[in-house]
Image 1: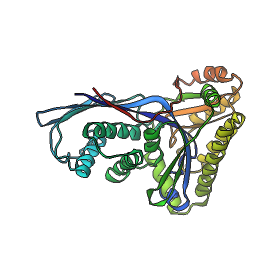
Image 2: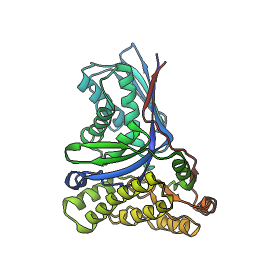
Image 3: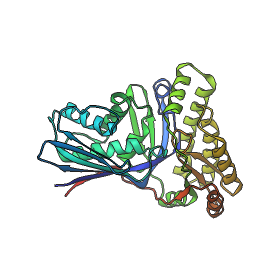
Image 4: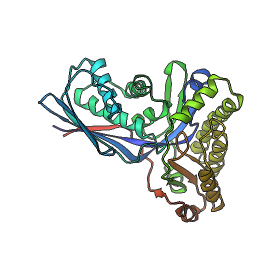
Length: 340
């Protein structure tokens, strides 16, 4: 028997950062994101020899462990171990013997939610294998708890829900970890034109979001006015983006992205760099009407809205910065699991 799962990565079109506590707890957050046909994959092969084999193809790491109730967190594939520990603890399965193989279509630090999406894929594989009683909201919330509480990984809440539900969603975040996912019924031609005009560019600048997110959290805790006001405007951006997409007003997308990018840079230092600013400026000169960095900032993927066939000029301009333009399409489905 073989159990597989895949969950889609996402781009955050508006509201990014308002899903991070304590801002979302105090003021409520709002995000608009869309999933892509880029995935995190997990494969489970049950074993009968009381061994656990964890194999990350991306990290080129393979470890073999005895099947125990709790796996020690020692810096080697701790994300996977944390998921296993929580599954065994919450669902009283007892020690499990299996091989788990994982890989993701984007590198860590891409800004496309790769870590959280991988958690969803792995949890989905365990749910398929063990027939766990987890609905979509349950699965996403459990993934959030594993990352943010069990493993103390800084970050927000949107990625887990995007990977689980899939599609284009307007998400609302409240205190006590309450989340409401509102799927948007966007006309097919609007979504097709959005995908055609949005150029996704991998800067191939490696970054870790931890420090940026921690600074953002501290700015809210310390009531830093400029940072909090920027987050308020980012949240407003998500509402405006939702209206523009539902009404098919694509001519507003670039301006809204630019509005969000200018405010995002005030949320914390390190979100942008001289190189990223140069890339952004040159993309606008080539015809893009707006854009932003994906995720917390500092590197990873950027995307630009390129109306009136300006995508070709923008792509030519981006070539001089190295990196790579990523082909993609939007997806309508989230987590998918199956057994062979």
